[in-house]
Length: 251
Image 1: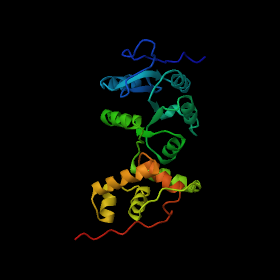
Image 2: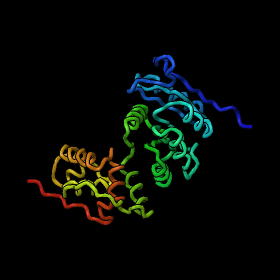
Image 3: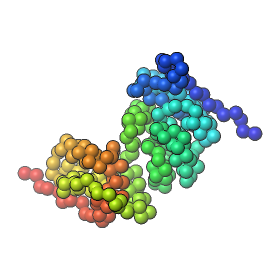
Image 4: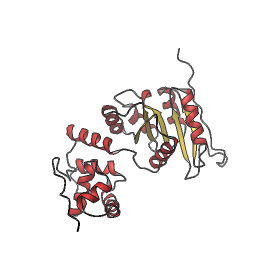
C-alpha cells in the first residue's frame, strides 16, 4: 500500500478569522513538491527567511501535489521535475484545478526535450536543482508577478519546437500595427538575442531597446520575451528564415 502522503497545509496566521488561506497581496504562497524530504526541508528554510514568502503546503508525490493544489490556495509551485511524467499532461490538469497557480520545475540537468515539453505544457520556469538560493528567490518573485523565467538557449529551443510542429498559423483577427524598427527588434528577440546584442546589431543603446520592448509588450498584450517570441511565430510577424539586420557603423 502507498504510505500516507506527507501533505502539510498551513494557514496564514495574520489573516482575519474565517479567511482560510488568505494573505496580503504582496505575500507569495508557495507549495513545495519534492520526493526528497531533506530537499523540502532545505527549501523551506530558504523561504522562511523571506518576509514576503510562505510555504503553505508540501507534497512528496504527484498524488499529494494534486491534493495540495486543489485544497490549498497558493501562488507558485516549486516541483521536482522527476515527479512529473512525460509528456507532462498533468500540468494543464493541475492548472485547471487552480487557474492562478504558476509552476516552476526543478531538473537535474536542463536538456532540450524536457525543457520544451515543460514550457509547452504551461510551466513558467525550468531551473536546475543546483540553483543558488538567491536566484531561486528571484525566480519565484518574477513568476509570481506573472513573468516567465527562461534563458536564451531555452527560448531558442521552444521557438524551434513551435516552428517544427507547424504551429505558426496566423489568427484571423487584425494585429496591432508595428513599426519597422519594432519588427526588427522582435525579429532579433525571436533569434534569442539579448538586449545588448540587439543594440549593437542595429546601432543604438540598450536602454532604447528596453523602451521599444515596453511599447511592443503593451501593443501585443504579452508580458515577457518568450511570450513575445511565440506571439511573433504564431502570427507570422517574422519570416522563419529572415536574416538578422545588418549592424550600423557607428561614427
